[in-house]
Structure formats: structure tokens, C-alpha cells
Length: 378
Ligand code: SF4
Ligand code: SF4
Image 1 (spheres, rainbow, N blue to C red):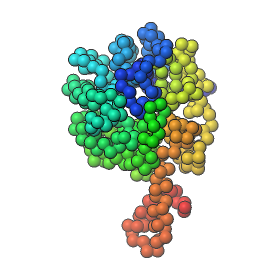
Image 2 (cartoon, rainbow, N blue to C red):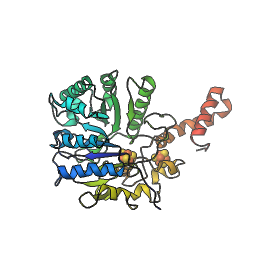
Image 3 (spheres, rainbow, N blue to C red):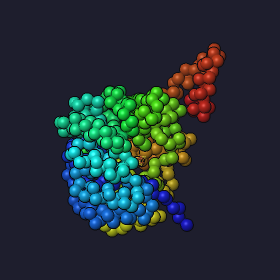
Image 4 (spheres, rainbow, N blue to C red):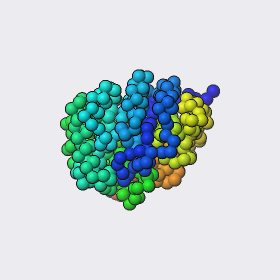
């Protein structure tokens, strides 16, 4: 009998239409897709999600708040007793929006903020005035008692503003999710991608925040494009141990035209498992042939993960990072463990060359390095 997979959460792109023009947008949002789901089809999807066992639905876009059926669909999700998250750019609202959001009792209202300064945020978001609107949205949502999160997408354009963003966020009881920009979208020049060292330094920044600030004051997490199995950066995520990419395992992504993918970040036609106009989500999710890259295929490590002692549990990191960077799955080259091996091997060699003159402290460090590398001499 084939294994059953429990669907925990769904990320649903309500529309690809967007009022902003963000440089890093992975789906190059702007115009709506041809043939986006109508209200009846959207209600059917809500029922289908419930039937499939889904517990939590995140509505995103494009910009979900400009979609004419946003409120009806959000209410339907709540009527069906599924948790609701809203991922918005925080620029589309009026005086009634916050009370209406409150009445939905959302689990999170996640708002994108990409710069500590107006200049940087507006440059990244492609529309002047968006910083003012978004920070005003955040402040008004907080005043209304909504559970506000901030999502920051880091690239070369804003890495130097992380500290300023921290100052804006801290003490407001905002949950802060930090993620890194990918190059899937058509507007994002690869030159703005973080290099390996910058990527690692973002991990260190998150670790520093989690060590220095009380979680009730400033809960901060790295998205799951960041990790894994680091001996230094232990706390980027909420889970103790990286469980492997959950695309098609416990999460699913729905495009506004009804395409079903394991994760919307895997923004390539080859990862479409089916379309809701031809098959129900329930059927697609429970089909033993679906999401084979994570569920059933024998996972072969790519070059980046070859020989890694964690591969059987890790599966090669984030599939989106892996595919975006290398064109292959199970091959995430920006893994912290891998980066640390490169960083620490020279230090280990240095210690080994002075082994005989070690102080107790140095010996401890060598033991630590040996433990990390599994005792291998390289
Ligand atoms: S090298 Fe690959 S398998 Fe090993 S921890 Fe990193 S991502 Fe996972
Ligand atoms: S592809 Fe990456 S972002 Fe998507 S579910 Fe897998 S780990 Fe998460």
C-alpha cells in the first residue's frame, strides 16, 4: 500500500495581478494570469483543501488584497475552520481593511518590508511611496491587534539594511521572517544574488538575533531556503532538525490558474502535478505518482551534496535553491554545513599543524572541529 502524506498547509496564489513591480519577485507578478479561478472554482478548492485534510491556507499573490474575491474566499477558509495567513505587500488598504482583517482572526498577516530606508524599499518594490504605505499598514495592523509578521527578502541591494530593519521591528512583537532572493523572476539580475559568504552572514545575523533577543520581544526565523546541519548557526528555523524539503510532503502550492505544485517557489512548468480544472486537489495529492521528486524517486545527491553524511535525512536542502542555483534537485550549494566545511577546513589544518604545542583550549577547539568533520583529516 502506498504511503499516505498529510497535507498541513497550502500556499495559494490568489492572483498574479500586482500593483507593485518588485525586482526580486519570483513569479514576475504584475498582470493577472489568463484564466484565473473564478469564485465558484475557488470555493470548490476551499472545500477540496478541507477534504484533503489541510490545516492552514496562506493567501498570497501577486497582491491578494486587490483580488475582487479576496474577502469571500478568506471568509470561506475560516468557515471551514482552516487557519488563514495573508501575505501582502501592505499597500492596498483603506480605513475599513484592518477591522475586516481582524474579523477573520488570521493566524498571521505577513507584510513585505525590504529596506530600513524609503529609498531602498521603494527601489526594490519598484514604486515610489510604497515604504510609507507599508510601514503605515504595519503600524495600523499592530494597533488593531493583528498578528503581524514582516517578511524581508535579502539580496545585495538590502543586506546592509538588516540592522536598520531590526531597529524598526524590535519591541513591536512582530514575527520577522528573513529569506533570500532567488533568480527565478524575470526582473531580477543575477548580479544581485547574495554570494556564499553574504548568504552565510545572513544566517549568522539571524543566529545573533535569536541569541540576543527574547523570542517574545522579537521572534525571528530564517525561511527554509536557509540551513542546514550547521554546527554554528543552530537557530535559523523553528524546527530543531531540518526535516527535508516539504514540497508535496506536507505542503502544496496552487497557482491562480489552478496549477498544482509542491511549492510555488519551484516556479518551473516541469513541477506542475496537474490542474484543478481537470482533477481535484484531493486526487492529485493522494496520487502515488505525484510529487515523485520528493516522495518516491530514489534521491541522488548532486555534486554539492555528494558524500554528505546528512543526505539521507536532509535530501539536499531546499529544492528551489538547488534548482535555481544548479538546475538540479537534491544539490543545494548554499547549505551552511557545506559552507562551513570550506570555512573551517583551513582552520582545522592550522590547528593540526601545531598539535604538539596545544593548550587545553586549543585542544578543545580541535575536538570540536574533529567532531564536526567526523574525525576526518583533510
Ligand atoms: S551538503 Fe547537501 S545533504 Fe549535506 S547538509 Fe548540506 S544540503 Fe544537506
Ligand atoms: S522548495 Fe524550498 S521553499 Fe519550497 S518547500 Fe522545499 S524547502 Fe521549502
